[in-house]
Image 1 (spheres, helix red, strand yellow):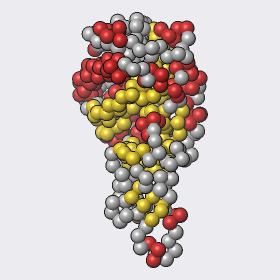
Image 2 (image 1 turned 90 degrees about the vertical axis):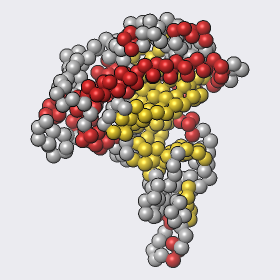
Image 3 (image 1 turned 60 degrees about the vertical axis):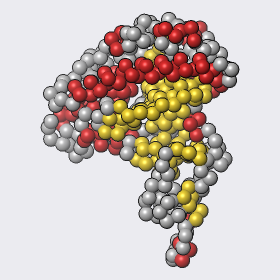
Image 4 (image 1 turned 120 degrees about the vertical axis):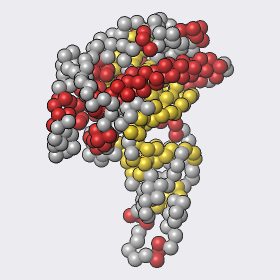
Length: 387
């Protein structure tokens, strides 16, 4: 594979990543090792996940004061919670005493108490209690609050950043809010969540969600034929890519359930009422905004060949209030599960192929895979910036 440079990437991988840079019409796809090599994953964590704004999904996961989740974000234990004033916060999930994991799972809490030595923290992260530490010279509780991380919300999504020096979230997202304004994403409410592990690289999961090329071959019996030929990929400003396609009915339902369609999002006008916009916010959040619903995926790496995936179905609040919503929404949930059940075997088969040390770099069908191609460019730049 070549000798390692001072930052951990081999010279050969540097060259292969550099070849991915624009124009995407003639550039190769990403090299196989970025999907299968544990050393590359470690470098991704440093070059991308420790520096980027990471998508945590919809902010209403933590709807009420005290709601929390203990997450692992690219190997980092994190607490996300909503404090008593309604602010969404993120902290390192490690006691300031001797590092014990403070919380596990999800739930609601009035305070955070370490199970080891009972150091206790408020939901604002301040250390409130530390048994017997008043006898320790020069100990001030104000110096030992939980380590905070940057956490902000836009358009109903929550984003986390470990790097205090990283650009602002507004700069990261660029014109994201303007492009997606017709869907009123911030007014959507989450109505269904599903979490699972998939035996594939985190990037391949998001890639398959973001491209049209595989639809007739993998989803011929479920959703193929619902989508028209997609528009060219949008020219975007920011760390994301997007593409729109008209649909025959809705992409949110299986072909044989189109009579169960929910009301159209009231803010949509013109052609936006006739299709779906697929977007990928780099590095790890992708979604489809349809005519009546929003379905969201986040993927987090667990290993080079395994990721944790969370899916969420969202609708406008007035749709969720319909008396028959639960029954009708089940058809949308069935679609999400059925299509993912078709994708997963192919993703796991792809992962086995990507594990060969003898694979080359392919090419993109840029009409049907522009989001994937633009992610490849973004990814290569992030990795090379640190190499």
